[in-house]
Length: 68
Image 1 (cartoon, rainbow, N blue to C red):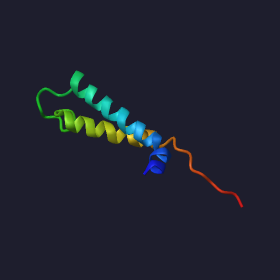
Image 2: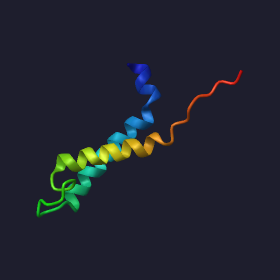
Image 3: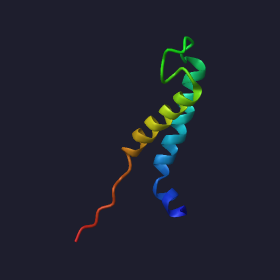
């Protein structure tokens, strides 16, 4: 488990920062009418932010290659 966390620290950081960003977006901007599917509730906005943050940060992970 510890090895997995060390190998995916960028992904974990992206998910956490995205979740925080999604929550702050809901809190500051949000959607007051309730018609917006993503930003109408805090848990939808937080989950979407976590997903986007994880995807964004995982793009920067370097793959290990072995040359023979």
